[in-house]
Image (cartoon, rainbow, N blue to C red; front, side, top):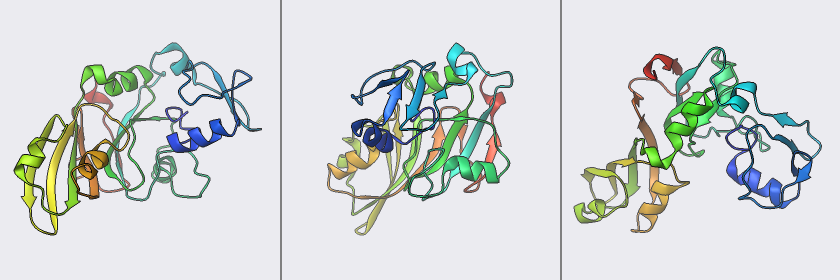
Length: 223
């Protein structure tokens, strides 16, 4: 459901527990139940949502689109939000991008930075499959002083401690998979609260000077 932009993971979980989600006419009871992308998903009495044709076939749409978006803080990565918060797709529509796209991975509401979106399901699966080890780099600010030893012991692909002082520490953290709240959790475990989480790279794409809320077409960067 989150990949199709129908709801966030938390929203999908609540809807499923409430018995409001049907797949091909059958109520889904288990959050971990896997479904095919060509399934018809219905939320409560809302219209069914079949996957787009290019997702059902696994092939790109007629015109392949991949964009890089600088997600601002306070924006959620869903098509609609029941709480009325601004969404990534709403911001994109305001900036002229109205194609139906899927987010490649997610950034939570408080996180900012590089978010890739595409209509190519094969690329989405390739970039998010942990087996492929696609790197994601984040600029992270945490409360308190992080020692070099603690930074080196973090369960990440790479950690660069850029500055450490009493009030806060600044690091660059590289991951090769996109677990939910992975960076926030790893710092919480060593006693440091993350106050800023900003993705600066995803695979071959860097955020560069792209301003918050802006997007650029990066289709040619993916052969």
